Length: 447
Image 1 (cartoon, helix red, strand yellow):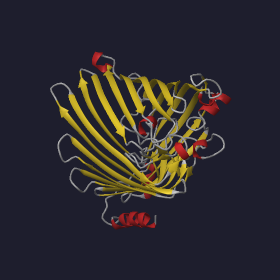
Image 2 (cartoon, helix red, strand yellow):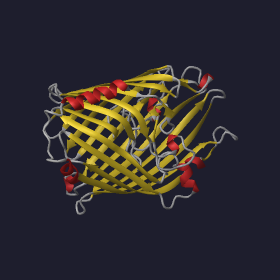
Image 3 (cartoon, helix red, strand yellow):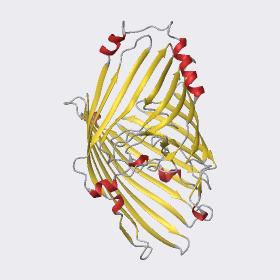
Image 4 (cartoon, helix red, strand yellow):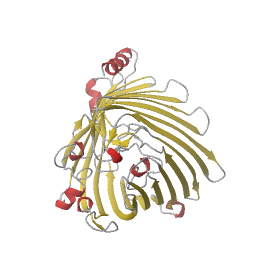
């Protein structure tokens, strides 16, 4: 921790006398700062069925803890000062309020959408010297292994330091240190009831859980992005997290190659991805114990910009005995994550997952701003070691987005996914199914 802070301080001090500055005075830096913001009104509705363990294995009942609907409103305000001797300051406040949330909604969305209040998600000191940019403080981070999700009304954030350098031609080097994490609601951060989240030494580790947070000490990461070869982007990242769940350190790895082949009237895409985790962390006990020394390999073939049409086919497979931790934050998504239900099923041990996407841009027929997607996803988990169950997940999803041309800054989005789960219980050789349906509507106005 001290090394990270001293290194950042050295970068800042070294360039003070050589850096150019945009504002003439410190007062000008504040008066010339930029303000932006967003108004949000989001409606989520979900219906979940589960096995009724007190009756026959094939019987399912409504899961009242995960069934309900909620309307949530939010205001997001951002301010960034002008540059002064290379320095700048930035802040982002997120506030939300669910005016009509009933008891059912508060229970169903307690760890991701119900949490009225405000949080200062960004509050950082920035510095730019030639090809190096540094930030220290609260900030949004978006890398393959450290990534805060924005799919809920309050976006996840981090507290720490980041440095980005582009001195090497066609190469971006990123180094980061994370001390605290801000989730979606206070309940998701370990509180007893839903409220606006705080920054805590707890975080989401996707693959272990998408909603439960675990204590950690500090986290460090380094990433390299290279575009030396035309149309090819290579990415590599490593992250280390100390004392996860106050028990074990976690190492996570990521490598990716993305190649775009321009054709006459369309583009072909070829992507390959590897991620892995190394740790002695174990959750559960006995035959239900889960270890996380796993890997996942994924590939995708796509076609885009074909008279407005696009399509892709993605496949991924995980190691036979161990699950995979994809990283810190819910934004560390796997290739086969589905539109609403996301990555969790595909990161389980001994799982093969697939996803097919079909998209269309309606601007090609004169409806500017309107885009759509149809999606089909499968995640099949075979039996792991002596575990008593295996499970198959099948998802059908659709989405439409509309950036309203007549009202600049206004966008509308509608998403729906139905997920069917079939579980095999080996103790008595029976199968049962469960169904999850979720609808999401988002209205956003940026200014």
